[in-house]
Image (cartoon, rainbow, N blue to C red; front, side, top):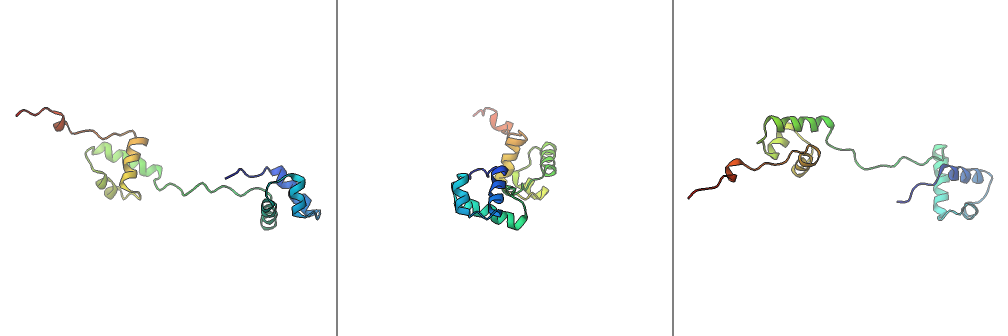
Length: 124
């Protein structure tokens, strides 16, 4: 997605439109690539009274709050052998199990440790 036009250029579009200049002529004079951009800025000004671009919507807000993450870290440190399913159930987390694993690994830097019994050499 291209960056929004500068506020200076947006202001000039509105001023020219208010003087009665046609949008197609505004496009050629100001060297704007798309005529629909001129129409969109005019429409935005008519609706809001401003030529400022609308704020960008950067996706959905995160489901895990900082408090959820702190609770997750405390629970793992309290009970290090707890499973991911048990963590999700006990803390009532709104995310999937694989996401819990990624948070533990990437954000909290808590890695899964192998059981010490599996590391011992077996004698037959």
